Length: 463
Image (cartoon, rainbow, N blue to C red):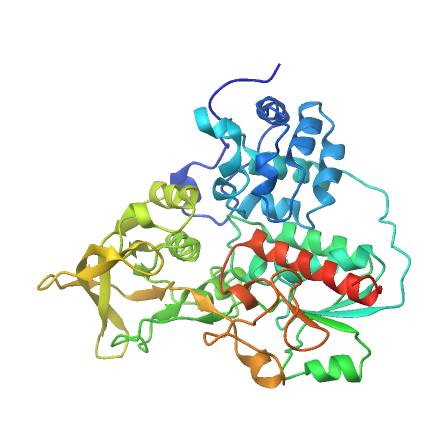
């Protein structure tokens, strides 16, 4: 009989007053007893609504069934049929709006904790010793993957399992893309990402770092001189957006992209960091998404008093609810219905404060959300010595500007066929944030899978 308890097993985690001063992982993971109990809450529905909510279509009832039986390795193998990064997805996917959002148990209580079970199963697998991976026989075809983020890693993994010779070209000195430069250690330990990448290397995937496509190499060279028959562009969205208000060029103003890259990739929070970053005492983070929460929580761990400034209400925050709750627990202040209009400086050209204006919600805009409208006469000055702009990102224009015949949106996203990931350039495919703009890890993975299937169909003659 299923366990009909209405609530999930809570996730064990570090105490907020301890974790807000360290970069160790906040969530500690389920014990075996908790995982078995939670898995038994699944009804194993005939209509798999949860699967329809998963962008990579993991057979969720099947892996949870094996988990409930204590067959953890079998559960992992089921997940691995669809996902190349289960330990990552179990930590950072927005399950509440995807698989868990479709769970039938959520209609009268809380849904099954699918993400927490995926993490448990993946961590269990990763902690055990396993036989060497069997490398598939090569099929004679070569594919290049640009970018080693979630879409690129997924595309590379799916193709490698089919016998393709795959090479990933990464611009930075470490592979992993946004998983290593964007998501903090306390949410996603980098050792987990590197382990997933080592698993792909064991399948025969080659990874070339410090290669900037559009500068070091061109797509034309990959295809015409190096023998790659197809190219997948998964270069992400690394170009930050700003508000274009006075003072954004002051010392002490960062994009969240730079701030997080320095902390996550270059370990700038360490006292001996070779690429240090300002340790602000009073930090304002402008924005309300997951990146804003990550930046705010990093600044807090570096000793700052942190205020998140967001122009709508708490209800409209686009960040995951869990990340908002963690930020609030850690002592981060939120100013809602507030928008910066200028950043102020001292005589040395450093940030000394921000001028903000109160907002109220008016009529809905194109996104369906009520548009923030300024309240006249409501401006005030807030003393700050650091401002982090977390307003989203767009695709870097480098690849599109150096590749002839590659059609893009006005805002920079590469135009593709939704069903295949095909671009306007023959033999070139794309997916993830390079196409959609900043989105989620699992959606990028889904795009990588789609493109891998289309590349295989074309090169194997089954298109």
